[in-house]
Image 1 (cartoon, one colour):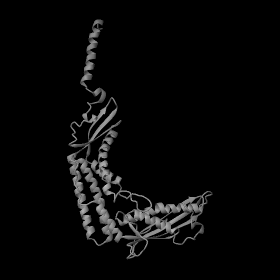
Image 2 (cartoon, one colour):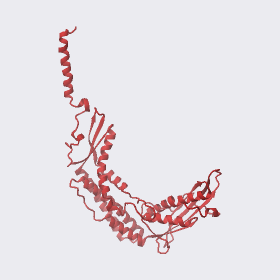
Image 3 (cartoon, rainbow, N blue to C red):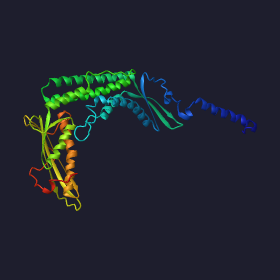
Image 4 (cartoon, one colour):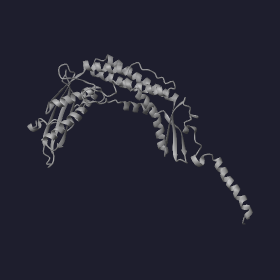
Length: 381
């Protein structure tokens, strides 16, 4: 049945009104999903800043938005930890001993990463919102201040117990290596404890932390003083280009926080080794090659007991024998000496043990290699 022409407008108008009314009832659904939360525009709303530490993220997909929200919270903590670095400079920051600047094994980045990882265990995604009109996801991450404070206090109390235990043993033991390792571990844990205390200041609305019973620079100085008087290392290198290699190894050990002497007498540990460089024929029409080898051991001066050995070698090539030798010497001075110094320091500080027997086939051959006068004095570089 056809609708009379005069009635068509009457029928269409209610339909249009019904459609508009539906849009009105849906609120912002047409443009942005559910209604925009107040926190998207910076208002705290139900998530009060007095109760929560907040971070917001936005991205084209939900996963990226939540990652950004977590990162926003993490940046707050990292900034506070970084601000405390000056108090740890004797332990963490760049050392200027020797001719080359380097960083200690426990760096500021490591401290902030470990600390922030622990902090973020207490951070949750509190809310998300999708803006359909803009095609943008929003996420709000937050830590409940009370829960975060309780978690930080638990970690700090555990570190305080570990520090006290290590210091008690360090000051009672008569074994020099044990004392060094206990002091080192106590100092490292104190750095982490201070980092957590920096986190605590962020979590607490008052901005106040809970001070430790010790200071990092005090323990660092105690360790350094003991090393300088009770655990000095001597270095002896023989073989090809022994003098520059010995100098590079000595500098590497000093950069690692150890004390080195040129005299065997009075040393606690002796680092001794031999290095050889010789030409090899690989039938290359353009380049000349040399092979290098090194055998080092670390010996207790008093007992002559070998506590660790390191053997390493390699092959280097260049346009001439002399240039290939110079390149090999650079590798030994810059890379191998640094790696060996770190391995020895890790052993002294109890972070890793040196191997007690050589397992690498790259060590020096037992039969001496004929000397080559052409390789004995490489061109300066």
